[in-house]
Image 1 (tube, rainbow, N blue to C red):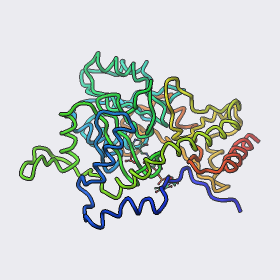
Image 2 (image 1 turned 180 degrees about the vertical axis):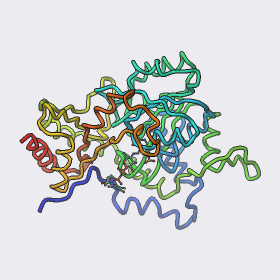
Image 3 (image 1 turned 60 degrees about the vertical axis):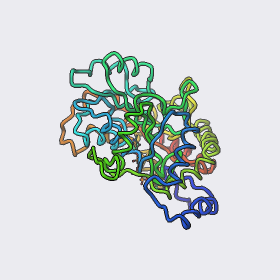
Length: 369
Ligand code: T4K
């Protein structure tokens, strides 16, 4: 009987390590609302991520949504549709209009050559996504944003621990938003964070994650509740101790995949990016069925028959979601459509046995017939 393999599996500390971390909460009875674990986790993250400021959130989605709100924007936000629902929904739920830029066919991030043509007098911001941990063209986005006076909020959900030219990836843009969800390279069960430089933005964000409350008798903003609780912060503190080791184990898994799949005609693997310290967040493969001999969907089905849960991240494109009732012209993002119809992310996590990687690759390659 073959064992079931899912697309990922949450990293967890030893049971006793977590118990030790939360033990003090049975004395203090302090469970949430920016307690000591929250403070400690935040301080440790500033060091680890190499950023100036960070504010913790309940999840990566609220990090995006509240960053946009804290910037007090109106009008259009240029983004990409090849992402998780969260990115686009954060824009729309702020009453802003997403304008979809196509993606680069190699990195799957915003195609900066198509960005400037989308800027209008209504454009207020750019929300690019470092998808799969592939870093956007930061310099070019920065140049264009400065030229037109636009804010930049990076969706950095997939990039925990990455650096670009030696700088923490969270230090770029007006804000960079991480997700610490259970399925990510680094998790705090659920969780997220916003990295930023501007103190005024930081105090606005802090208000917004706590109902817009400024002081016990002062409520200047209409906020949400996006506070990270102490149990999540404690999980983050524990997992942070092991994250380098986890990333190293992921590297070994990715190398094993590459040893089987690199150079196979009709398969496109994730790029190695210059000046980037990667975190091996996902293992996407783009299937050119005409060359490879099988479609993405055929490979997906075959893996499912063997109880291997590869996932079609990110299909469908967010601009084709039924909630938008056909509002967006999909012909404007042809590369995103091409990739989304052909991509499959294969199982990847630190403790994935290498024999399972061999087996997965064997099944994938046999799909060629
Ligand atoms: N921006 C981007 C670009 C994102 O990708 C995401 C989230 C966000 C923003 C928003 O961040 P958060 O608000 O989520 O912090 C998953 C995650 O729920 C989501 O966080 C993630 N992106 C997205 C790409 O993937 P699903 O619906 O595919 O997850 P699910 O429940 O099918 O889990 C996938 C696999 O993970 C399971 O087959 C097994 C494993 N797993 C899952 C859970 C929940 C575990 O091992 N442990 C667990 O607790 O969305």
